[in-house]
View 1 (cartoon, rainbow, N blue to C red):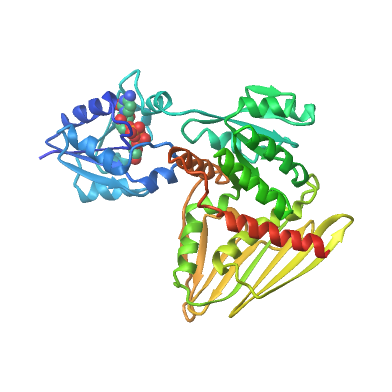
View 2: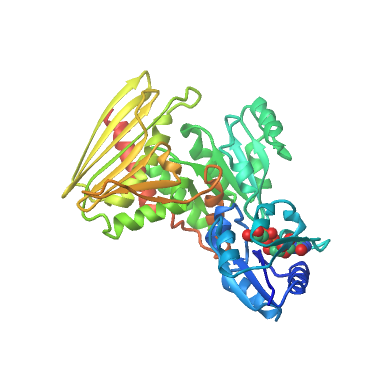
Length: 433
Ligand code: C2G
């Protein structure tokens, strides 16, 4: 008996998929199809997949051509499959030509011509809502939103506006943006989603204007260091029934959910200490301290909760700018220490000490792909990781896409009370110094 295998996502099942299965079947007597699992697709950057795994499997099954269906869950699984299922032919479309030649040691590789004029990408383009993103910025760095938005179905940055005309022009050229605007009202009107990317002092006004016009907003965090202003923005977003999304990507990255699961689910025991530090050396942005603090306070609030008994802040300034801050929070049976440096070097790390184990994230922990767990008496750490390219913006946009689809305006990444608490802490720091 000759056995054939082929793989694919088979999203929005179409004629091209049917044809390849039919021709694959002709190579042997028994056809196995590997349908990609959701995590595997996310890992390889395929974020736009529309159908669930169950639907995609069901569609492959309905062709009546397939003898066995398996799920492709990880990179490199194909080698194990070829051995395990004793495969004679591996069939795949010629968009992959040459890419799997190394597998010809295990079986015969067959690349078949793709069916012309049809693809899942085109079907998704035609069938789904489009959202134009407009970016309001005061520098020419896009925080990777332009590239990352393209990876999510229906989202694209098409508009740019900066109060400084020269920056708008440079931005448009650098990222190949279609439309440039010379006043902020017209960019807001032309966009479905407005990304407010500018220094903290200017954020509130732009956010408010966009919300007033009924537009969804993504903003660099924090929106402000005045609690009252943030509450007003939140109220306005509710009144207008639009999304107000804080740009903290970490909470949308898979590995961070694993970390939360470990810490909140008691898997590292009772937490004794939370220690987190971050620093940057960026002259271009004023008040960068607040942006960095927001990133560090969020994981603390999520992991340790908001019921600390006492907090004290030590701050040093360079002129008006805070250059270093150490924030100490006293919880009933634990302590949290956060160190933030702006042009003062502090090594980036996040450490959570529990009675059963300690978690560590190093380097750029706020967009980390991994963390390690150290247990007493064990020399090897357990590694938890997930792979992705870029800075994770695509996951935030994907979360927004899910919210839009479900007509939900409150984010479950950063909860409203967490956003408010962060700004309350920042306001206290601002007042006491
Ligand atoms: N296909 C085709 N004609 C089309 C579209 C797709 O012949 N018009 C083929 C592809 O070449 C592939 C199969 O249908 O062999 C499934 O395509 P996708 O769902 O796009 O899957 P893909 O991302 O190519 O995954 O491990 C995953 C596999 O390597 C392939």
